[in-house]
Image 1: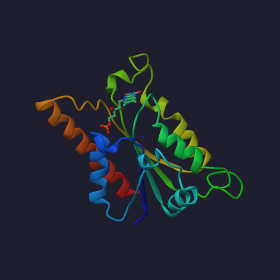
Image 2: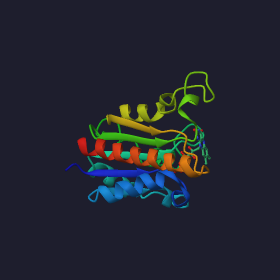
Image 3: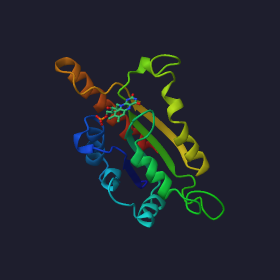
Length: 182
Ligand SMILES: Cc1cc2nc3c(=O)[nH]c(=O)nc-3n(C[C@H](O)[C@H](O)[C@H](O)COP(=O)(O)O)c2cc1C
């Protein structure tokens, strides 16, 4: 079985509705996988070597995060800035992540129809993933898959809440299936 590293980018996972459930589902079903919770570094520096070793030891890297202000959460951006450095992630003797598989799994508050050209969010969701796609290409990571669940609105009740829970369950199951297939 491939070595899986799941990286959670939510800054407040405890109070999350969707990302928490997705991560818990993966934890239950991928008992061999390692989990990295970036919110633990909101008030402290990353141990760069430790983070790099975890990445270097994995075959599949799963990024799980909510979209915040049309981008990955800032703690995840910082993780990339601090850990994916020259000599490790890219260039000459670097490229330690070469051909590892990258899976991107995200949630948005906005609904699917708002993420279409010139609708409320102006652009399709792929546009907002451009920086991660470029990071993957520069580091020779294999862009394996991206999966997205729209319109996470935990304030709904009754039938709508049941539908939302079903949507998150379906997201989690498809994500697990994909990871296992790689
Ligand atoms: C600071 C902040 C910024 C957000 N920005 C966006 C955004 O740009 N686009 C969007 O669709 N949703 C946005 N949202 C909604 C979140 O993406 C949504 O609440 C999250 O995906 C739900 O996952 P969770 O239940 O795990 O928190 C934002 C939420 C917060 C707290």
